[in-house]
Each structure stands twice: as C-alpha cells, then as structure tokens.
Length: 196
Image (cartoon, rainbow, N blue to C red; front, side, top):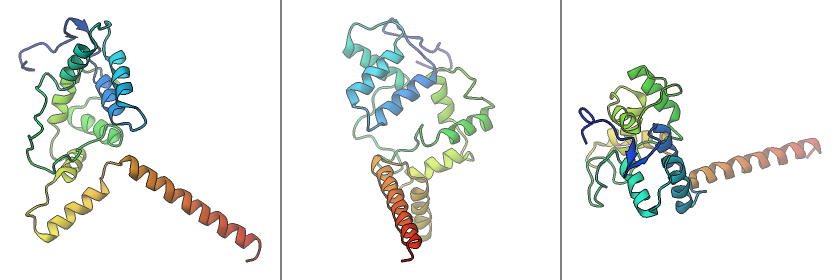
C-alpha cells in the first residue's frame, strides 16, 4: 500500500469500517486506560470500528490492528531504533492540545472540523516539523541520554520529568498528595478556630 498512489482503504476484509482518525484515537485511549480490561477495550473498539458486523472475531481483531498500523507489519519484539527503549512518545489524552495546535500551525487543519482518514492523520502526524512543541516534547521523552555530557544529560532528564506521560501510579500519587494537603489545611484551620 502506497499512500501516494493507492486509494486509502475504506473496508477491511470486505467489511466497511469507520476510517476517521477519531475511532483509532479512541481505540488507543481505551487500550491505555487501566480502568478498562483489554478484552473490553477490544470489544468496544470492534463495535466502533466496524460498520458491517464481522462474523470471525479473530479475523476482525487482526483486521482492525492492520488498519491501526496503517497496513504495516507488526513490529518485531527485538526492533529498536533510537530513543529510550519502550518510551512512550505521545499520549492522545495528555497531549491533545499540543496535537491540535500542531495540526493547526503546520497544516491549517482544524481537527475539530476535519474528517480525516486514520492513515492520512498518521502520515501528517509523522511529518510534524521539529519546531512544533509536540515534536520537541516527544524528542525529550524518547531521548537516549547514554553518552551525553553531564549538562546535556541533566537538561534532558529534567525535560523528561517535566513532560512525563502520567501513569496510573503518578495520578494516584497526585491524588494522595492533594488529599494529604487538604487534610493538613483542614486540621490547621480547625486548630486555628479553636485557638490551639
């Protein structure tokens, strides 16, 4: 499949599918949501993705994943090219405003208004300029700091912390910290009210 000369697919294994990028963004968000079991995320994604009801579940899942990967073969487990191994570069949840502004700044596309095929969206996403804040942030997150001098390494590690994609544990820690601070303020206020 060559995006320059071939029509982008609107069916998978003969079944009509929702090609708009929003469906695959939802698929990715559901797969990353710790509150949703993997089987439930896949079940929901299949219901959203397929217009025509598939009869073979395994084939439907494979077809949806093929579409998600833009027709590419699945990556081999041993493949690793640059950057930190396993570092997540972006989050459709956390980086939504950066993604929206990047598409507006570079392509003059309003993602709120634009219907766009997922493969087209991914091609444009991959082509974002280095000067776009999102691209810089993704570079910080995935940078391999091995071999960097001390100052550069310190800078990148600071940026990695500043732009870290929040994990479930990070959100729980923030929630706990907020609760703890609120309780301390409440106790201090009560002590002050009672002249203690």
